[in-house]
Image (cartoon, rainbow, N blue to C red; front, side, top):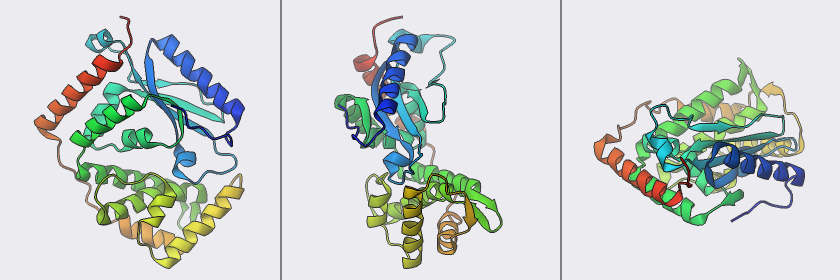
Length: 268
């Protein structure tokens, strides 16, 4: 399947397609899922936002028996416009079991460069079986705290571009307070489904409009309502999460082996 809009820079899309083909050939891997992540998929891109392609890859089955296994990440060069890299299926399952929500977001991205829905659905089913809500909360807490610290350029100044990277996980934590199931990754959906103080909502929308038409937001005084709200959401969250336990890890192992049987390419 492919769901890339015509509004994307077609030369960038062609370059991403070429990189994915090169990765598959050079590393002898299969890439059953490749999507756009980052601000474009999250719904707050700038005119100069780069293209963040993320993919999942599977090595030949024998590669997972090697005493000296290959890296579980494949990266391609950053060039200012393209950021293309991916994770091994084993890494994806392992991190998701520990609570990392990134894999689930990649699988639910609406912007797909190339993907097999059967692979996506099978991996989503496995994630549903091994994912714990408490571990997912801890993931978004860590992301939110890290991004908010990164956004703060000084005591009274923030890097406006980075504010969104703290707002989205904070919104996700609030969404998890009020809803069952899997939180949306898109900012519009989070805003629509989360109760927010009017001042916070207004500042987010104002900043979002500015980001949509500006190539470089730079630094500015801290948006006061956003700052107070983000810190209120993130501060009391406990930095703990339950251990997956042996039964969950065995379910993850079994699910990984099933996926490997179906999706590993031929080779050594």
